[in-house]
Image 1 (cartoon, each protein chain N blue to C red):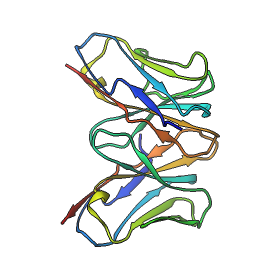
Image 2 (image 1 turned 90 degrees about the vertical axis):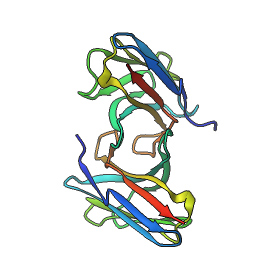
Image 3 (image 1 turned 45 degrees about the horizontal axis):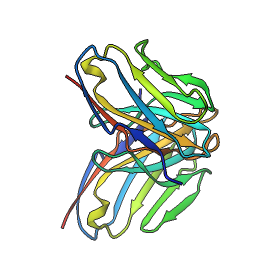
Length: 113
Length: 111
């Protein structure tokens, strides 16, 4: 069990650029979650996958955001035409079963200049 | 938006003191989880609670799932410097897969 892995750990980009983050969940976990966390706040839910199916998306996930989990293993989160308000920590988590505890990765800190 | 009210927002204590923090909600939750987060890192799971009234310990940490299923508390006994960080409660609503997080309690320990 190597834990949830996220890459990159930090990303600095200019406004208007596209960015993509990757998450590798714990290997036997079929549920994968993306959260966003801004300074001084708790994580906020963005979207959730069960295997390769994206089952729920938050209203926070605007049209500029897209997430995929093509083979039910790793996932990517892409933000197009980044805005300064997108600056945040993007966290990935995974769980084995519904209702089970979520294990988080170390996050990707995005700074949009 | 957030549906959990976590208090206090911050605590400043002396090393060796006991700590208590809690989380309340207007909604009924099926699961309560407590996480600790260090700067620049993701939240680390401390304790998971699955039944109303459940009291669970993890070393010096003890957490309880409230009888009404609308609240939970976390106690830390005999605090040590490595307890410094931000503690989050999180609840899972019935039928929903996602967790809802509180705003966090920032713990600072004076040596």
